[in-house]
Length: 343
Image 1 (cartoon, one colour):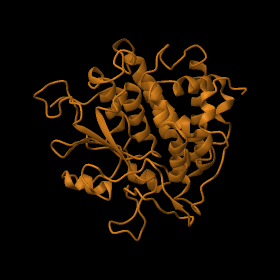
Image 2 (tube, helix red, strand yellow):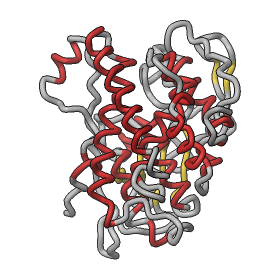
Image 3 (spheres, helix red, strand yellow):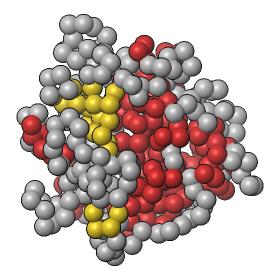
Image 4 (cartoon, rainbow, N blue to C red):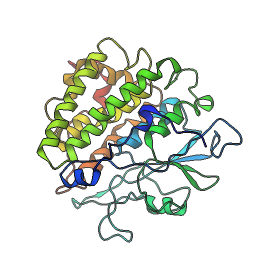
């Protein structure tokens, strides 16, 4: 069996040392993705590269799903890997399988705030016909997982992977040869892999997971440390982008796709929901210019449009506190396409 990717693609969870104690002490500690098989460029592989065979289960509000969808869109794999979109709010206490489960709600539902909400992109399970993602896991023989994204093999009805970083890595490497944008897009070029892995590790700790450390930890000291690390990280990223079009040179790579989801959510969601309110994104002129360049990449409209952002807001605000979803800020995400920060 092939070894899984080493380096930053595998470091997508917190250090698990004394995890239970740290959680009890108020620190947010992300769990471990355990379904981690690999798709290979070999006909006799357990999971060979094959168009039409694999399927993604995602939720638009989830940033880990978002980076996988970015890889699918930018690499041009829409006709290679199919997708189903879950509702942005999870199950409640009164539902048959219990609370906090990702579910399919193609017709929408009445939210915690009393308003019926539905989204055009949210559909039914087109492969397994299930109501909850937990049921998809169970049908494939996995009883202890319920997370997304989920890469599913339609041929064997088994789960390939639920680790977003490794799904993204597969999309940019083994799937690249059958992608629509093979010539234009190389998300993991061999000559830049060391630098990409280094930036991935930094972005995960300070920005992507760091935002959750600030937003979901109940201990003031943990929040303050995460807050400081987050904005120190933004300063460093703004400095990197002062001399580079993208994080690793003149072309977008996997590192850029992993940074985009938390920054796409920053002003409209994280700034208030996660109490990361020192600055707005538009105050970082090089990052703001980079956002415009990212929005211009192939396939981006489908994974960064107004509905996508509205599902993000529904997912983060619609299941906490009183469940009300903010109407503002006005102009997002369209303003990301305007590269000059003073506009």
